[in-house]
Image (tube, rainbow, N blue to C red; front, side):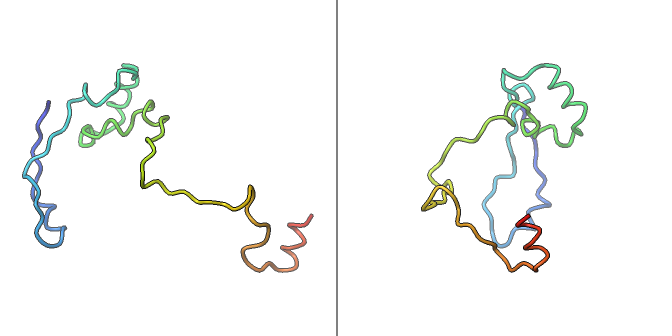
Length: 103
């Protein structure tokens, strides 16, 4: 595992006292990518993404892009009382706009 130092200069942006360790752990490039990733894709991403963002390479993964996050207890859900939302305009339309929609 690759250990990277984190500068303390951005900490002045946080209000009040914060309890953060002065270091951070980042996985090496090999640990960030799934085994499903193609080596050509990894090389392409390494060429396109600037070195300052290499610690976030997993964000650029095509395989992870196509997967949905797992459902959690805090997921938002809207209950609708029918199969379709009520029909009607949300805001008043001019006669011209109303006629255009009816056509």
